[in-house]
Length: 365
Ligand code: CIZ
Ligand code: SF4
Image (cartoon, rainbow, N blue to C red; front, side, top):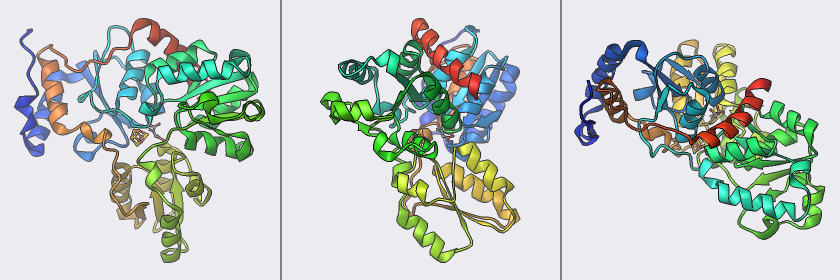
């Protein structure tokens, strides 16, 4: 059956509750033709339909072992690109709303990274001296750049292993686009803060002197996550005042001083595991995305654990939230009609090079 694509207009005004039934129906109809992957930061209204959930590393690992023809990705654009790159050619990855991007990923682009390559090449032999590492929160063409220039991808789960791998190969690292993850990981390896200067891609020589570049160990791209940037030392101090026996756990995308003053720092998988395995009745202040913290708070209530979000302002990842029940049901119903919409397809050459960098990461994860 091949009929016309259903337009989104028909779904826009549907109520969330009505979409829930339609999603359940569509999943039944599609059976094992589809698999739905959900990132931890997704809203409950769609997350509950995920067949598998995880951080971007875990989801990338699932993708390699799926048989379904369609992979529906509840997450953001770069994750769906990774799914397309790591799945088999006949599999189709769909992102329910194409505007679900990542503002941090957008802080680096190929033109800027290539310009950085040219600027650094004025001072040193880039390919002999520097390993480019891109955080998985980046577009596929940046992963391809890393594939082509002996580089690698990392996630917040495996960043320490990846940095270790990089320093066994070459003396320096260019880390993009998140300066906070790069700085925290380097700091934990014992690298001095002054040996990790910030590289501003909009300035000649990144705003650094030749001497600074030559003496650096890690060049930290001037990029950050707008959500994690909201967490402050004052939030921690206030929590400690009220709950001196409590624990603070933060994501490494948070500002350096927040990480420094936390009891634990790690990826979303690490945060989930740590709090889930903690003793009953413990108290936690958590510095990561709101949807994950709310879900965890509800799940931990029966054990008497208090799980509190770090900021008093609501900082949900607004791009993750674009994946809503309306877009999910629209996507599924078009797949039923054999008219998949919002297919994510990375150009072949780019995908091959990006896969090199992803495979290097998966090998050491
Ligand atoms: O890697 C991911 O999935 C993200 C975006 C955060 C984390 O730490 O899991
Ligand atoms: Fe990107 Fe930050 Fe949203 Fe994660 S929370 S997807 S880094 S904008």
